[in-house]
Every structure is written in structure tokens, then in C-alpha cells.
Image 1 (tube, rainbow, N blue to C red):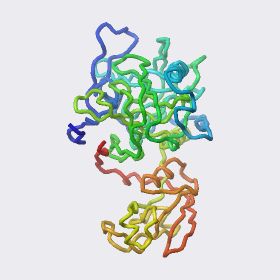
Image 2 (cartoon, one colour):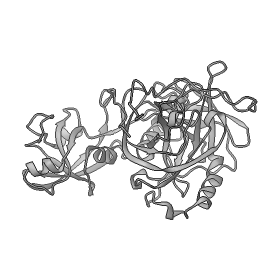
Image 3 (cartoon, rainbow, N blue to C red):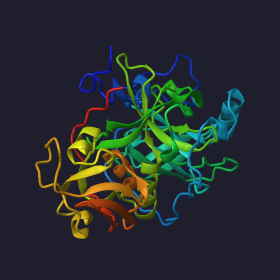
Image 4 (tube, helix red, strand yellow):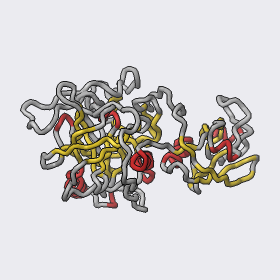
Amino acid sequence: MPYQGPPRQNPYPPPARPPAGRRRRLPAALAGGLVPAIVGGVVALGGAALTGNLGGGATTIVNDPTPLPAAPVATAGPAGDAGAGSRGVQGVVARSSPAVVTVTVGERPGRRLGSGFLVDRRGRVLTNAHVVGDASRAMVTLEDGSERSARVLGTDESTDLAVLAVERPLAGVAPLPLGRSAGLVVGDPVVAIGNPFGLDRTATTGIVSALKRRITAPNNFEIQNVIQTDAAINQGNSGGPLLDLRGRVLGINSQIASESGGNDGIGFAVPIDTIRPVADAIIATGEPAHAWVGVTGRAISPDVAEALGDPRLRGVAVVGVDDRGPARRAGLRAATTAPEADVPRGGDVIVAVDGRPVEDMADVSLAVSSRAVGDAVTLTLLREGARRDLRIVLADRPPDVGVAPAAPSRP
């Protein structure tokens, strides 16, 4: 049966239990439609559960606000970047697995287990917010079975992100480099590493099955530009990395679509371009921040372009401008017709952001969400037939914007 979306597909089902006879050093598995990927209470991609429920705000303000390492200039590319075939995958797994950790929250009964990964030499670990819930501390288990206590530096429900700080040095463990999800195309090979059912550092492979998917965060915020993959994800995978064949993080595995609650080959990862600026804000201040421009828009389809008199026109017709946002202050104009009109007329059309052409609102959203609050972007507009550039300084998104139930896109 095709995926039907909520409420049939609960994204955050209860966790499963680990295999009998599992070594004591691994905690019990968290639980897992569309579900998180944690064991013991979180849903994983492909029907598995994630490792926690999104918690409240930040719990600790960090004294060292050094941001995450910069992403490479090159975008994530196809398999040829790192050598095709199993040898490339084997190299990714060998290099990356030591930086993937098991994240455990709570005590028995009700203990939750998920995944996470080291992102710098200061001991910072990224995972899903639903893995840690409202906890202020978590336990991190390394590849050699040793455990470290970690502080929860902050969480963000809107992107399902939590940032941890391991309190003792992780000698000899190289952090995972962060890539750029903007360079992905459907068909690119990917590798997922995590702890499904408590089976630590399990690697699965697949491809990017689709882009620009939407999922609902634990606080009902719509996460856009989500990566869909057929790499197997199950309970306990929540918070683990989705990697390219250079071992660069493309996203954080967060949910699955499944009729059975297990891996049905449809998993979702929140893109790293969305995660990075939010993580940097948590590291710097203890609080998440989300760059926001304050517009809503509709993609210009070929039929709409024809009706507007320019069959070649592509871009986003602005149908709403939030009075609180920087777009309003910069003078962006919304269509004078009703937002639901078949042909929006009388407003600006966004054709590019920072010189990069856009075809739909997801393109605009990704261009904005990958920037930090206070950054400036240049929107290239068509206004009354004339092309013009408009510079906008991004603001922090109000908490009520974008919070509404949103069913995941149908596969």
C-alpha cells in the first residue's frame, strides 16, 4: 500500500527492545508509518524509532562559542568523487564509524537509545532533539565500549536537533566533516551509520531517493527540503549521520515512512545545510536561531507563466509578506490577488537568491535557512516586467511561524 501519512503513520512511536543476550554496555533500544528512529521511544527512518522527544529550550550556555568547522567549498557530489563501488563504501565506514556514538538518555525502565556523531575536537555531538527530550544530560558510548557523560547544550524542536558536549576528551577520534546538502541530486549514493536496535555502528547503503520532501517536527513545524533515502534505517538510527562517499555529513537521519514500523525503504534525513546555522547558534548562545525572510510564495508553473504572458518565466510568485519580517521592511510586494488565486498577479516574482535561480518556495527556503540570522541575502525580482535586486538582512523567525500540522510528501 502507498504511504498514507499521519495519523496512520505516527512519526514518534514507542521503541523496540534490543536483541536477547546483548552486551550490557549497550542500553535497551528505543521504540519506532512515518516514525522517529530511536530505540525505546523514538521513531527511525524506514519504520524505526528515533531516540528521544524534542525537548524545550537550551539547557546550558557554552563558554566557548567557536562555530562548527566550515564546510568544504565543493558541494556534495556523485559517487565518482570518492571512487565507486564497495571499496568506496568500505572506506567511508572505516573512517566514519569511530565518530558515530550511541546516545542514551534516562534510566531503566523507559531508557531511550539513539545515535549521534562527533563534529569537532571539542567533544560536540549532534543528534536528534527527540532523542534527548527534556533531559539536560545524556550518556555517550564510543566504539571501544567506553562511556562519557555529556551535557545537552541546547535543542531545537523545529529542526529536530540537539547539540551535546562530551565532558572528557575523545582522544584519537576524528570528527566527521560536514558537507553541503545543496549539491545533492537524486541517485547520489549515501551511507547511513547508526545503532538500530542497539546494534552499534551498523552501516547501510542506498541512494538519495528524492529531494525537497517535507516532514513534521515534534513541535508540528514543517521541515522542508528533507532528503529521502532508501538506506535502511530502523529503531536506534535516530540522530545518526547520512554520509556521502567522501564521508561528509549530508543530513541527520530522523524519520521513516512505514506501514509496519520497520524499514520499508523510505527514510528521511534533515539536511545539514538546515542544521548547521541552528547548531552554531546553540553553540554560541545556548538558544537556537532560524534565519527568516518573511514571505510566502507559489511556484510559477508553465500554465501560470503562460497566463502571465511569459511562457519561459520560472520562479516564485510572492503571495504573502509578513508584517513583522525583513521582507516587508525591504519593500517586497505581495500579489494583489487572493493567495489561492490560480494566477497570482500584481506582486513580485523571486527568480534568484544570491544569484542562484529558484523554481519553487523550497528553493527559497533552503537558501534562507542555510544562512545565519543577521546575514544578508540578495533577492533578484521581477517587478512590473523589470528585473531588480533587493538586499535583505535576515531576522530570527518568530516562534509561531511555520508551526502547523504538515503531512509528509507522498513518495
